[in-house]
Image (cartoon, rainbow, N blue to C red):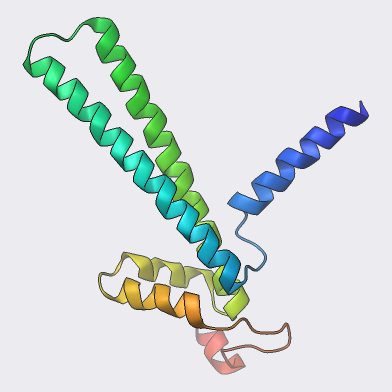
Length: 145
């Protein structure tokens, strides 16, 4: 019974560490996490394109069998699930970094604006976190947001 509780605590810690939007993350941990996420996403994209090209080439050459198509579609579904988990982790780290800086979560939507998103990421990399009693927004601005 005790072993089962420990396992569930371990799983809960992993979920909290990678999928939680609460808490803070320092600049160095954010950079490391983003580096690992970029490498993993590159692997996912390469794998998805290879699987898709394999599927397309087999269909064009009329070599496709039902089992080969099923396997390719299965891998595409797995890669899509991995990519969606990656996206949740990316926004989780970004929201925690915004918490550390003292800004609101909804600012992570800036990542969808071209050119500005690069400046936004540079800001997340460079700004130092604030202490609990410090806030970047004054109370009047906070009420407007």
